[in-house]
Image (tube, rainbow, N blue to C red; front, side):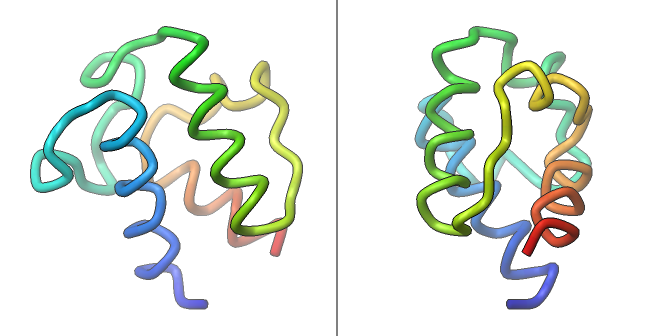
Length: 79
């Protein structure tokens, strides 16, 4: 899977979790500032990542990634 495909998946997950239009999200979207810090939404995104990519991402670690792109880079490293 390419990085672009991973970014697209991260955007899809974020759009579903935060109930926003995916067209308003890109790899530079700041997760906390532009989407929010609700832990239940982060858990939903983490669960989607874990299910689709078969990797573990603790919710506490999720907060370390400021942007969708940083989150995608983590997923690429773990695959």
